[in-house]
Amino acid sequence: MDKTIFQKIIEKEIPSDIIFEDELCIVIKDINPQAPIHLLIIPKKPIPKLADASKDDLEILGHLMLIVGNMSRQFNVEDAFNVVINNGEKAGQTVFHLHIHLLAGNDKLNLPK
Ligand code: AMP
Image (cartoon, helix red, strand yellow):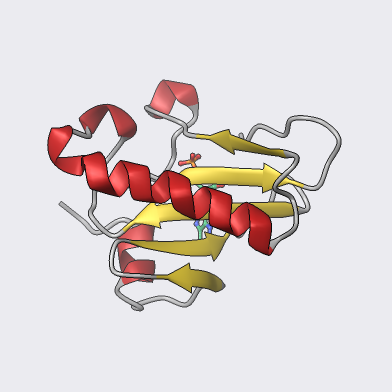
């Protein structure tokens, strides 16, 4: 299968605005932000969508959630942010490499299209 855009970002084949990186994940700014703060928390393991995750991915999934919290504190929005995971094309998923949207900075929910 062809590499997704996020796989290319993880492998530094294409540039992106990287906020954080560790052995399990990368955090980038969304290129088309739907809120003043719109980050993508992306596991390095190429799980296509949330429903494809298994028990083997427990550590990764937990880690991603903790990174969301860390990012919210880094951006001083820990008291008000939204987390979105689009699962499947019909639900609006466009990149088939699991990612968590962290949205903040507006006074209402901003769902990514
Ligand atoms: P989803 O619709 O949930 O699959 O979200 C994919 C997200 O990836 C969208 O919000 C896009 O704006 C974002 N996106 C696509 N390409 C890039 C890129 N090169 N750098 C940063 N964000 C991207």
